[in-house]
Image 1: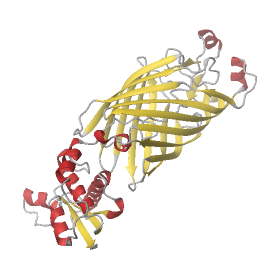
Image 2: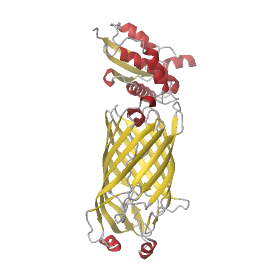
Image 3: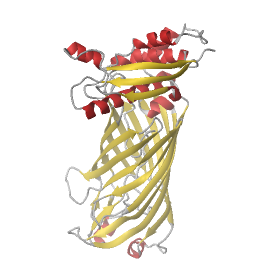
Image 4: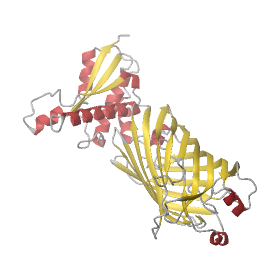
Length: 447
């Protein structure tokens, strides 16, 4: 749902006392790994990695999503909607690794309105109203190449009113449309997403709320705890444009956990809405949902993966037992993983050696008990910072190998910071030697 605003006629708009309004909004994104913001279809985005077909369902509950407050925004004068419970269903299709279509619609399970609002709309009952929300559609096209550090996608939006009489404040009008950009960057230890869009909804106004021309924005972070569990923190908001009005800028903050079970993603958390003070709307809200992708798109994977897969195809499916020292020697040549400066973001030039390392590990996976991925830094910077950076880089390599099909149960990441230099740091070259990622093979099981 884009905005909790009814399609009221200009006549009814003029008859109502023009109090200031606070409003709550909820939107479950068409991206596999986020709650409300959209990704940019980068090669490491969850949808591109998991499947062509996307389905989702979500539930959102909010207490007092629409209130009236005094013109000085200090006193609440009425609660126009007491509660709203909403379910949504979405479907999507990845047409190409750069092109994605998505559609969804919310169904409002229970909407309780005030007697004042019921009288204005000629509604007899004030409780348990139900209604279908606007059908929403989106086309997303990635503009950047696979090897870019950051990715940008163009979004085209549209919605269509499904109800002839949207009494329940759940519509943007007969139709609405918009255009925007999504930016995505993966730092290994964290994913950052930024959204901007311009939206036009000719009938989206109620009392003093005028949302017919608006800029919408979003900022999202995902921080993994493990390969299957992490936290999402996302902000979405909107403001009138081109004329900025200080009372026309509601926002929502979503904070919660994300769990991955294969290609199934589960979400749950709480929301904070509008203005952070006692007279804000939506002072109690929570959400939960699930997203799933299937029919994996093999052609959507990085080209370098295909090249290296061809290169190692001649290796035997069932190799003869190989001594630990020989496997270690083969893996040692992949220790020179390149990262962005002071970051755990792996540079594209390291994808090929890491893909080859992943393929080698998979060849001997049944013989290897465990591989430790050890991160090391030089001595510049504080001990604490170096320790954190080395762990983040080891985690990033582990996540990358896992994305290439290496069993997560066979790889472990450890950061040693500056504590294990290979050579004295008497030159820049020696410092570069000490900045490394090493693969250490534990026990070999001979079959």
